[in-house]
Structures are given as structure tokens and as C-alpha cells.
Image (tube, rainbow, N blue to C red; front, side):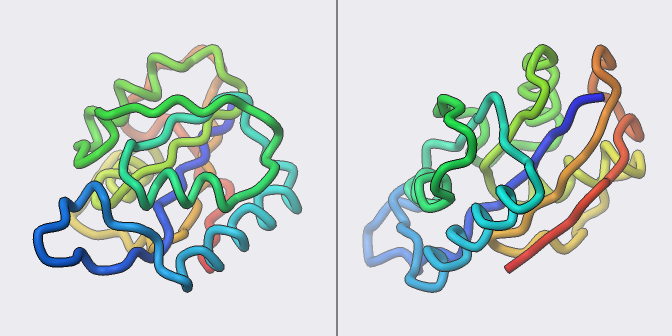
Length: 157
């Protein structure tokens, strides 16, 4: 079995006038949430061997605030930003050799991917809050498809 950890970025500040959405930073609350998420991952032994992160400021800052989560090198993946669950599924599927993959991204794509992989239906809203973590377990060599994974843990700050 292999694990897929989906981490939604923590709370971010609202955009300043003229500020691109990609540049929105974490809020003070978001920084605390991200640190708590890192603590939770360590407490549960969920240390990824590979990390894919959206290039937005808030996702990069969320990842940095996690602290030591096993030393996996993070790759910034532009396709994660504003991704559909199908795009995210393709990204995950290309990482089949990872035993534990952490994907740091955004809603609605992350919550729809979790629902699709677990129940086979993506729905419009499943309720993954900022800083929330969904851990999915799936067969080692299985292609990503609807209903392939078991949702083993769900946490939010």
C-alpha cells in the first residue's frame, strides 16, 4: 500500500489591491495552523518521501511552516494551482513510485480529488478546511481512478 497526503494551504490574508492571488501570504492564524499540521504529521508518522506543492505563496509558506517532515525534497508544480480533480489525479498517478506523497494545494480541487478517490464521486463541496489534511491509502501499483483509495485519516486545525 502507499499513502497520499492531501494538505490544503492554511488560512491566507486577503489580497491587497492589485495583488495577484498567487502572491497572497499566510495570515498569522495560517502560520499557526501550518505548524500544527506539521506536528500532526510527525505524531502520526506520516513523513512523505516526495512532495508536490503549488507555486502560490500561501502553499509554499504552509509547506515551510510544517517544519521537519522527513527531509523529502519539494517540487513546485504549477499545474496544482487552480487544478481540477482530473489534473491532480494525473499528477498523483505520475508519482506511483512514491511510498508516501504529500500534495500541498487548494480547494476545490483537493477536496474533490479526495472524494473522487474515496467514494467515486467528487461533488461540489466536501468540506476540507484551510490547513486540513486527508490521508488516502491506495494499492501500490494501482492507477488513480474513482473509488481506488481508502480515506484513513482526516484532520484539520
